[in-house]
Image (cartoon, rainbow, N blue to C red; front, side, top):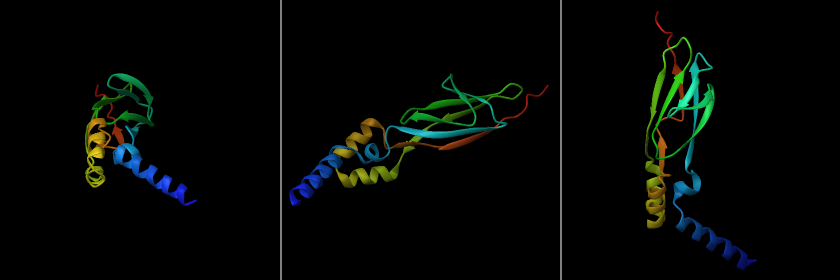
Length: 127
């Protein structure tokens, strides 16, 4: 029994030293909830039709996106999704060692988007 506990402990330590904290706990993608008023607007992510509001899109971290909300009779609304470094992940990586910093920096998994949800208020087209 004691050997099993020692093995499991060593395995966990090994895993945490080979991975960055953000890579282990957060992953490479963020989910962003998108809605509009009125609802039913088409969502274009970098020009690609993803569906209609309300919906959740899965976006790769460390990449910028242009999201457009398009609905007949309404002005198109654009949103630029940018990302920033999560300070908490950086601190945890510093505490866990150099390997974690390298892994999270190389993968960009310690980044997060400015929004985790966004509601576009669409204005009617003026005639």
